[in-house]
Image (tube, rainbow, N blue to C red):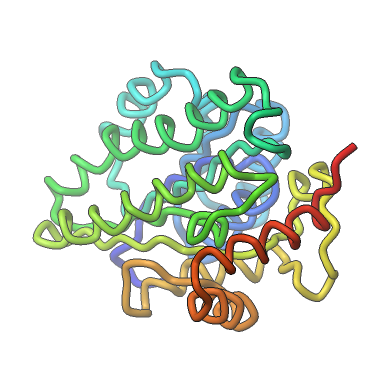
Length: 261
């Protein structure tokens, strides 16, 4: 990892899965860490593991990004820190058709994935601008690149992340702040297991691999990077189709992945 991402990195959604993998990868590189998650005991366990294994400083912040006041608390906690990297990984998802999803559940996804991520950007990126160095990594998804039934609200929030990242890529470049949106496919996280998804095992990537690919995306032309050869081939094939055919094909795939009932 280039020195510009030191000395401190912030990772949201760090209590398990991909967020914990990011934290381990960054700790291995010698970064001190600020870790955010709403799952307090799990977050404390990951923090203790990283301190013991890598001898880095770790500050866990138990925050629910769906709470509008969380961004201010994070800003206060990070005000004196020299943040070199922010990983916007925290996300909520609900499986089901849009009209069958309780509105409150859909709003929870929006509040976490859109408002929560934007709140973190507004909380910590001004400090990077002032220091004229740093990086922002937005964890996107293939679901944000084309419409997916059964996870439509989640995909729509990830599409927001793509557009936000593209805009920040240009907006922050004059200040020496680099931005990437890293879009993985299926990742073998606890959340993915809880979703009940039926995906052919070779197409599900380990979190450690995805975290390394995402961090390496800063070495690739930006701002949006699709992670993994199979995912890049899939997205290229879908883009080659008329949009109406691509979304109908994905509808069949998603209904097999997340059967109703």
